Amino acid sequence: MSLVQPMLVAALLVGGLGVALLGTVKVPLASRLRIDEARVGGLVSLFGFVLIPVILTAGFLSDLVGRQAVLVGGCGLMAASLLLLARARTYLWALASVLLFSAAWALLINVANVLTPLAFPGGLAFATNLANAVFGLGAFLTPLLVAPLVRRTSLAAALSALGLLALTPALLSLAVDFAALSPAGAAGAPAPSAGIGTLLANPVVWLCGLALFFYGPLEASLAAWATTLLGERGVQEQAAARALSGFWLAYMLSRLATALSLPPGWEAALTLVLALACAGVLLGLVLSRGQGAALALVVAAGVVFGPIFPTVLAILLGHAPAALHGRAVGVFFAVGGVGWTVIPILLGVYASRTSVRRGFLVAAGAAVGLSLVAVGLLALGGRVS
Image 1 (cartoon, rainbow, N blue to C red):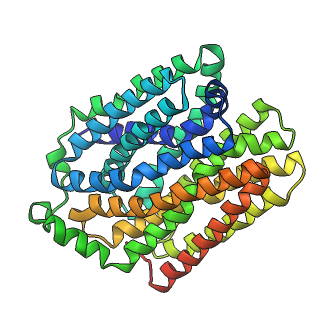
Image 2 (cartoon, helix red, strand yellow):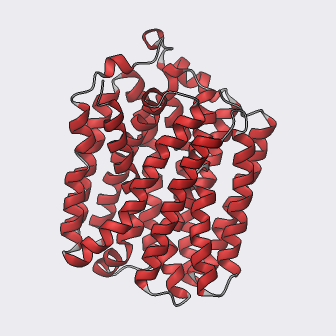
Image 3 (spheres, rainbow, N blue to C red):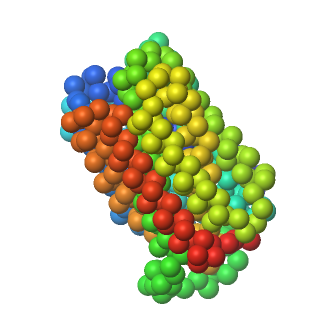
């Protein structure tokens, strides 16, 4: 049992790597494959599209088959996908690699989110924000370490090394007693149909899913296009990469600060404040002209983006029985995956016709949608213990 937290930390670091990787390798990958911004948007959107069926299936598997099997399977598939992407020379092979990578990430992240309250005792908002600060650390380290590795070796070598690294949580899981981590009452958990029916009848579950519908694409789009957006302002590539690292650092630290300071009962109110701040920051990225302002706004986005996902996740887990947490997380990501698919496509297409800066008007509109959902959560009393 002593390896539960190290295993979860490793899984969260690999999960953070997953969400930041496409943005980090976008430029060398696009150059090798000779693709434009619209096709880059297609890769980002495919990542979200695959989440819809896979993470919902992962929720059932996690609750009913076993979390260790799902975790090990996710790590193995992630390693295979990165090795495949390392060797991809055509857009079709890259699509296949990202499809497999997204499926692997879905399996891994479902188990990681379900285990979070069990590995980090305390209030749910504390546990989810603390765990996702570790996730943010993985995202922060990805551009900081992978970009120099690609320059010093090659894209193929860097992706192959990351594939081997992705196996770490699976190896640590072999020393963990997963039976002892089962939530109380899991043996008498509802049948699959009854369980999913209970979740779908809960309006808070739907609102949390809609929050991810609007929020997920914001994070994915900024991770994928921040360096390109800054390049349009004349920012040098290395400075843009440092700004992206600054985004992930601020993202991580804001989650840690929220874990340590958010009073119980203020989860929905915080979500609303942060959603409105997202809209303001994204509009600022569209309207600002100077390099300094753009660099500062990218980092500011990390501050306001960071706590949104874990705080909404805390609301979700607080309104679902422990025996249904895998399926609750599956529904959450399945609804969110629709937005994760559609919104980056719209942003990428609009950016290819105008500019990435103007394309972020689409992201600003999504932030307004997130604000409306947060109002709904506040009205329903989205409070957790």
